[in-house]
Image 1 (spheres, rainbow, N blue to C red):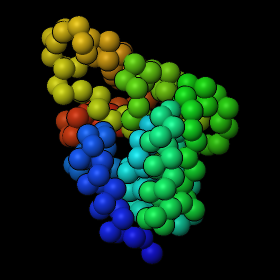
Image 2 (cartoon, rainbow, N blue to C red):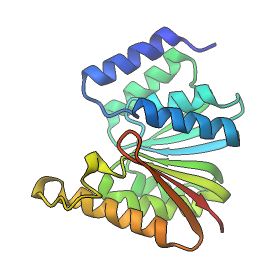
Image 3 (cartoon, rainbow, N blue to C red):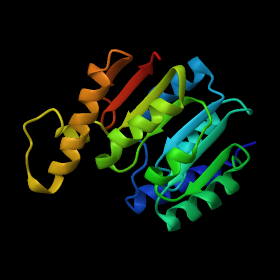
Image 4 (cartoon, rainbow, N blue to C red):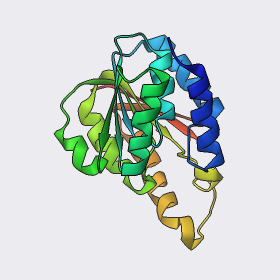
Length: 197
């Protein structure tokens, strides 16, 4: 059903070329979540080469649809080729463009929203995610601890903006009374937010 050789190849190539893909322990946790809630529709913000979207497709039943957005045209084209080669293209819709522009045009209701794109835009992605998520749905945000900088007194100029935005995101999801958030220290930090509308 799935071409596992092509899947392995995609992962190897991504790691070789330093393309950020979801870490194995984070993926294990998400796999558990997918098995538990059996989502019908997933929104991913940040496709890269299609690795995580492919994993979601492999861990969900055949009726699950994954909509995923990628800003980088070259990476998106690579993702389109990858999902075809692996045999998950029937379940995955890849949209090319800026998520900030694309998200407001979407009107589907999602069981899961997975955020893994520009750190400085996490709060914007959250706002749109909350609009699109169904009641009781989950918003998952990857890399929220950002190499441990977010929870430390890190203040170097190079990463300061990303760190500030991630701290804001964590503040929003932990202080909003309609959200129940757990932050796991796996991979580079995974925030799991349950939405009670």
